Image (cartoon, rainbow, N blue to C red; front, side, top):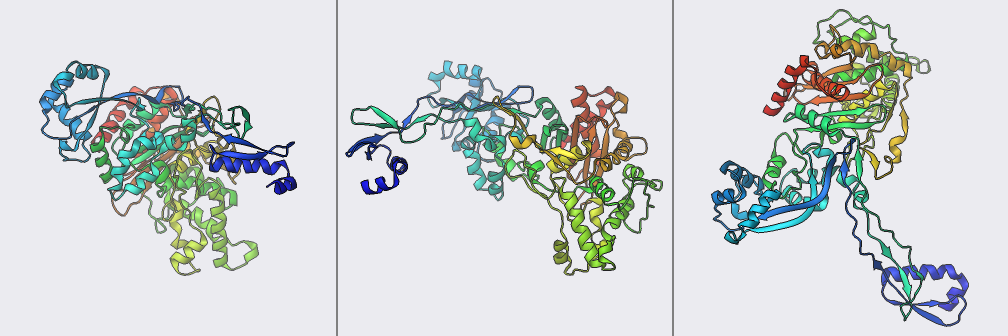
Length: 607
């Protein structure tokens, strides 16, 4: 040993100390002194500091607490039947309906027998009643424990759950066909920022001699770190309002501030209360959610990619302008032998008119100019030209953050999909495919798939005239700002002038004769820029889509709405979007739209 040490010096001594301490930290160790010829025996210790870090809170953008760790009282019922539920109701101050409902929600699956055993959450007043009559109920057990408490039912997919507290849900999920999918993807912010929320204990690593005196450390000490609070970008009042509008319908609504990328509202519908996954008395509700045909536990804005429909005409128009395939003054006739057009409108003589009327034949011909253009370098080889042009189109479109994960601070974000020339070579089983076989790209259908986050970000890009910050849900961690990557500005490959050329058409969409003129906010002085979309669906009713921002000249909010099987984007998705805009910008809905609001909320409750 001394030969090796004398050869390699004191640096190897430190390495040997670390290796010895890691493998057996409490064992004595021979450490040759730097200036001595005899070995000195030290003992490497690992001392855990007594302080336990408290998990950080989660707060909204106005510092309202959404998630906190607090004491909770549970009433554990006997596992064996019979149980006098009528007497239990008298004890807790519940009527018979409440007793039946709470018992049904607590049992592990619908129809389960009460002998399965349940735990019921109690309020402070209910706890006092139980303690007062505890002698008459010897079979009841009152438990107090600290648990994550959700102060609002809003924001379930974004907030997520603490893995350690979700074990009952995870066990339930393993018994369902969709269980693995949900276990991997539902963690939300609680999972994504788990390390920062948890903090960590402090550890000391002293080297002690036989007398217990310290002689340095065998490893770097770990400082105690309290769990950090997360200050979200979400506005909980706007979030709750948006959830009321979406309710039990399938789809999503994402609203963000285009100036910062901060997500203001994040709704995945059908909605469910945020505490459902971890609440001890919600096993029955979880069983229903796991098996529900509409898959309410699916985090739709991040995980589900759909054809965007006509809202994608904005992207195709921007790319066509950049490539010189059209100009803002380009007009095309509404030739329905090319593709059907559901809107009865005059000839679209300009790009603004094409967007206002959402003319399918117009954008068929826009994309045709992009794909069928023959570069000078290729002369007459149209097959090679189509491959080259599609690849070039895809390159520009990907600069919008599409066909890749944006990097939002949620686990398991989906990338969406944009087809490549090679994809069509394989799908069509020939390299000689024609534009006619891929024209669905022109109207945002076919192989294109975008997530809700990408749709909202697309609207933000147009609002910003070509740039964006990665959408995110946390604006501050403790006393620090967001993660560094959320402060990096991303630019598309499209010149800002070409985005500016889209705005008049988007404003016209919301004006008289436009596809969403009924959803105008002009009566309250807000100019909305928007684009409707109706996505064809061969398996049922069409899907309704809308993207837009407001005010059009100085955007403060961008919104994307997608309602599966919702019908027309103008009548189903656009009203939801503009009311969220109005709520954010003004704080309330004008009396003129109150009947809309009531109708939409009532519809959301029925679905």
